[in-house]
Amino acid sequence: MVLLLLLVSMNVLAELNKAFESADGFAEWSSVFESVDGNETIYVDFKSIRKIGNNKVELWYLLDFKKTQQSVNYSYLSSVMHDEFDCDKKIIHMLNLSFYSANMRSGEVVWSNSNIKEKPQSIMVGTSTETVFKLACGKK
Image 1 (cartoon, rainbow, N blue to C red):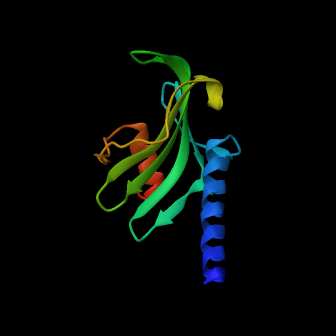
Image 2: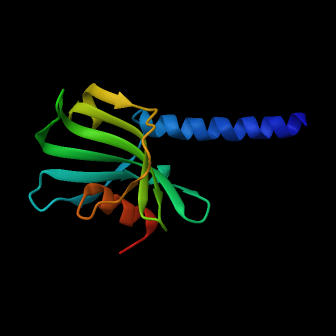
């Protein structure tokens, strides 16, 4: 029983460590897409990709912008997302989202939510999310 608890605890710690590494700047960002106008580049942390069951994939990715993006309450040049994709149903469940004042996850955090409780949403065609979905789920 003690050995089982120890193994479970080790697995939980390993998963937490993996999450904190990705979220805390130790991610290895690889460029996977640049928009035609050059304003947006998508980076994925391939080390963070994790399959969940037969049809779900979870990963961290970064959107980096050349031009400042404007929200109602703040402006930002990069955002980092931790999402879960259902490859069969073609839906996304957002887990974590942070916006940064400067490029490549630098500068100040202008908004962040690590406890998103929104319902999963359909993948919208022609979006950054669709690009990451196709990569994560192996669609072409």
